[in-house]
Length: 303
Image 1 (cartoon, rainbow, N blue to C red):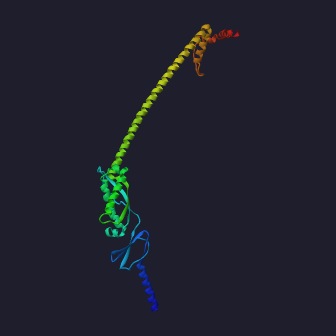
Image 2: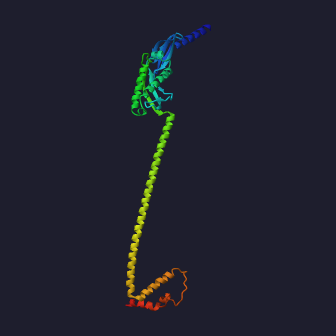
């Protein structure tokens, strides 16, 4: 039993030793082997690898993929016309030389991101100082981003190379600082209100002009129509008077009888009308002589 236990213990020790000597490098990583704190080897290809057991050798990993660094601060930058603007940006970068990266930057990706953030921010401050706000919002933004990328590459590939490559630098937002933005919004609002009030006053004046012209045309049209109506009415009355005169001149008794009928019609226009007159009055003369008058009127009709 003691022998079996010894063999089992030995196998466990051997397995533990082998597991500490074997390591796998993923295709998305660099494997860096350290020997007593010094870089012994850099594994760039994926697969199973061997090393000495700790503490003689250790292994760490660095990401070889394309990394993204976003701006984290909102510190304003001065433009060429001394306007304070806030710029949001991002950088696409990767580790290309793990040995140089570890010696000059740090042991992990966060160390490189922190230092790269400082370099990119300084490059943006320097380049934005040379351009106006209009340039930042126009096609010249591409030129500015290219200049920033060039400066960043010069910094990371200088006397002590970082072992990284900056693939792209992009601006995502350009805006005034909050105080200036609020002032700009108020000025824009005041300008829009001024234009709106001007349009309203112009529209009101134009509306009054149109209404006045319409009233004038209405009055002119009514006056012309009344004039034409009075003219036609006068001509009709004149023609009627002429016809009456011609007709009444031929028979005086008929004319008197016709006028009496008009008078009766005007006097008794309603059933409730009441008149108090002397029966011997001339008003009923036509009624008293209705028989002889009717015969006189009807006599010509028998011919």
